[in-house]
Image 1 (cartoon, rainbow, N blue to C red):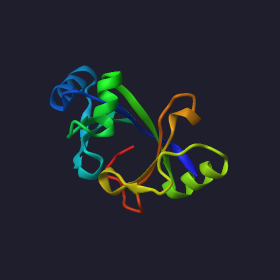
Image 2: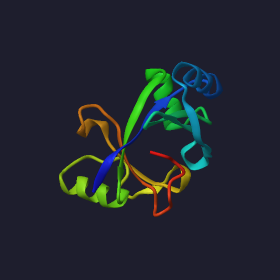
Image 3: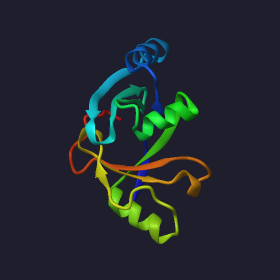
Image 4: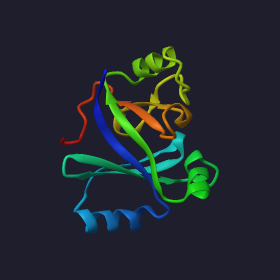
Length: 141
């Protein structure tokens, strides 16, 4: 079951510079920072009022996020929907004929489980299903 918006993912060229700008511009506070080796990214989750923004920076030149950055530049990468089970949502979407990037949920930041829907299926928007794996999230909503 979808619970609501978890975060908006934004790809950035310079993580520390972007972080400083977000903090100065909208008084964002850092909730979590992590390198996710298997996804070849470093992420910083920011809290801005009641919403979360995830700044994403590639850690290698050949990652999918690096390719996205080279092709499209900085900007919105995806929206993430919080759900009870990322795997369950992937299965439900597949059953509805939706094209998936992930058929199996995988590890995400901060002990979460994630899975992506191909943007071709949702009007050009990359959508991520995210569940927090039964762990209380370090996020205040």
